[in-house]
Amino acid sequence: MNALFPLPLMSVDAATFADILDGLDFGTYLVDAHARLLHANASGRAILATCNVLLDIRGQLMACDPAVSQTLRQVLAPIDGGDAYPGAIAIPMSGLDGDRYIAHVLPLRSGPHQCAGAAGTAVAALFVRMAALAIPTRSDALRQAFKLTPTELRVLLAIVELGGVPQVARGLGVACSTVKTHLRRLFEKTGATRQADFVKLVAGYATPLSDRRESPPCHGAPR
Image 1 (cartoon, rainbow, N blue to C red):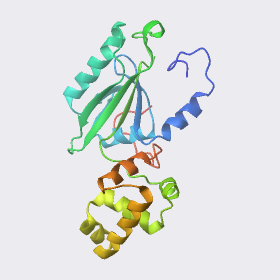
Image 2 (spheres, rainbow, N blue to C red; image 1 turned 135 degrees about the vertical axis):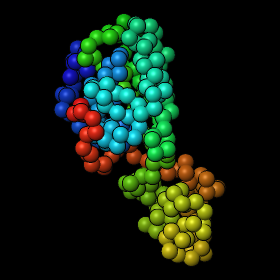
Image 3 (cartoon, rainbow, N blue to C red; image 1 turned 120 degrees about the horizontal axis):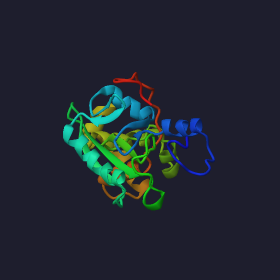
Image 4 (cartoon, helix red, strand yellow; image 1 turned 90 degrees about the vertical axis):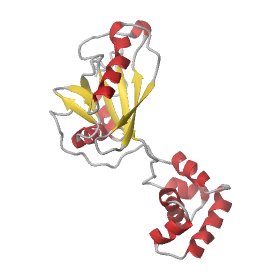
């Protein structure tokens, strides 16, 4: 564990830390100053397995888009050179299928604690996920917070995912008048004044935890 995080003392062991990362819904990658992949969580391995946006090429984390790979190297270069790092940065990416992703790069050390270029030492963490609203798969907290009925919760999530009243009515197989009735109750219970407010509401209760099962690796043995 200290090879990844050279701290004087860790309160959790490597296996526990890996389990925590595997529980996250976004792909998490630990890389050294040369973008060598030191660890990927379960969601990260699932992204690699699609060979759609990121690749593990002989231990090197690369993007399918060469321009993104170059940007990543430029972001990591200040760490490798021992320069002051500007802080976290977001890198937009596109998959081969046209889906959009976002990668947030977080430096793990800076200043006197920095060990630039040290082999096998993680200098940055990448957090990658599709650039889309995450609909909560575990909605009990949302339902309990606003005392929603199961039907009201279904209508709320359908509005966020499908759009207006006609689309929700078709999607749920009910009349538009029924959707409007539930919509009025949702406005009363949540305090929202327009349907667009429901998007912010649902996003605020989206879980960072994953229930995704692991997928087989695409290139090499994922870490």
